[in-house]
Amino acid sequence: MGLLLTAASLYVPQPLRKRKLDMLFNATADAFHMTPPSTRGKSCAECLRLYALFTREQADSAILHGKQAEVQSRLFQNAYHMGEQFRRDFKVTTTDVMRMGSLIYKMLQIDFEGKPDGNILIHRCFFSAYYSSEVCRLISSLDEGLLTGLAGGGSLAFKQRITEGHECCRAYLQNDGELN
Image (tube, rainbow, N blue to C red; front, side, top):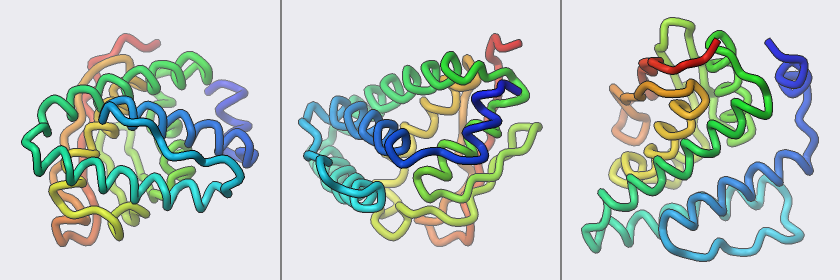
C-alpha cells in the first residue's frame, strides 16, 4: 500500500474532498451534456446534497426521454477515467483497490465494504434517500466505471440495491485488471 493512500485513509482535508467532489460533478454533468451547478462557497455536505439533486433530475430526464443507454455509457467512461487517475495518483495495486474504493465512497457518505475476493457490501448510502431504483441503476454506471478504472479493468455487477427495498447493496467486482 502506498504512503499517500495510507495518509488519505487517516484524513482527507476538506479542500481535497471538495476538489474530488467537483471532479465527480464535472464528469457526471459532462455525461449528461450539462453544465454542473456552481459549488462555489458551499460546504462538502451542501455540495453532496446538490450533487444528489442534480443527478436525480438529470437521470429522471434521461429515463423519461429513453436515453439511458447512451448516458450509462458516458457515465461509465467518465468514471473509468477518474478511477484510472486515482489509481495513478495513489499508486493503487490489486490489493489496494477495495481500500481505495472505501476511501472514495466514505467521502460520498457511502458505507462501502469491499472484500479481497471482490464481494462488496454497502450498508448505508447517502444517495438512497434521493434516488428511485431506476435512477440508482442508471447512476451506478459511475460505480462500475470508477471501480473498474481503479482495478485496471474487469467488471462490476450489482446483485441487490437499497433503492430496491433491500437492507444493503451487494455487488461483485471481477478484477481482470493489469495491476501489480
